[in-house]
Image (cartoon, rainbow, N blue to C red; front, side, top):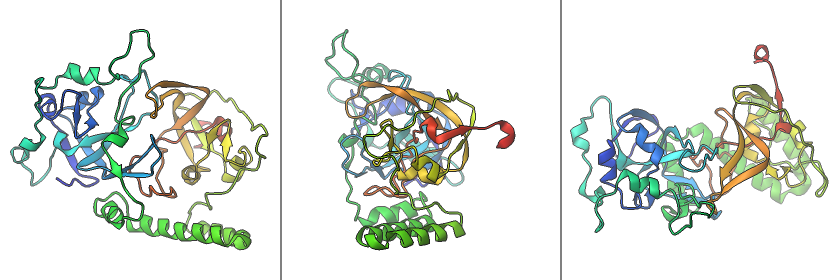
Length: 345
């Protein structure tokens, strides 16, 4: 169907979707996760076309996948030990049908190529639920979970950063604007120039920041923290709770909490967080546990991190995975935030 960002779709019925799945609850290797059944029959807008994504499992960079989109729906973690990461869900176009002016539902019946019936019979909802746990586990063993995130390398292929077709599809799909493309290319050129002209770095950085300030852009996002490696980084416990209002500190203030590897208590302050500095947001989750995508095991965080509403990776500065539409929530240390009252919003 080649759905575009902004298109409206209706999620097919439970039985229609089950007819596309193998006994492991997958279509072309992509798992249909149990909580996705609750959206059957409902209509949603396409958030972005998921023609590519980033590899958070084996760290190979960008990955290509086909006939998939992201809707404005995230995983609730209920079937996965209460994981709080809230990843965007992948949806195969075979599980959807477009709605709106000019579309007829009858014209979008599931084709034979997407109807999957193996020798063991049709997939059931119980099969989909059972597939959330890796097979052959003992009752006393800590569960190894299986989800769209843990299996990502199996249903995607490597996408070289220099393949220009991906950037054309970023634009034609409505995922990004021309302005975003120009901005990203300008940053990439400047970043390469700084790496090869170290002596000119201070004036070039000042020029970059001055130019960005003219149109409300972000400062150069790849500076180093000020705390020498091996020295302790500050710890702050504000006990922030969902719904509270916070302001993200300035980039300069945050750099003073980071070591030379841009980490605070082991948590990386990534370049993708810089555009949110000095902004005001609400706390969404006080994150204490998440699913390790490499192992499938539940992991508990010693020092809880904070997830803010509508604050996620925009892939503006990411090497080899520029414009990734996955929009993974950013994690924040409380040392990078300050609580504010409602009147200060």
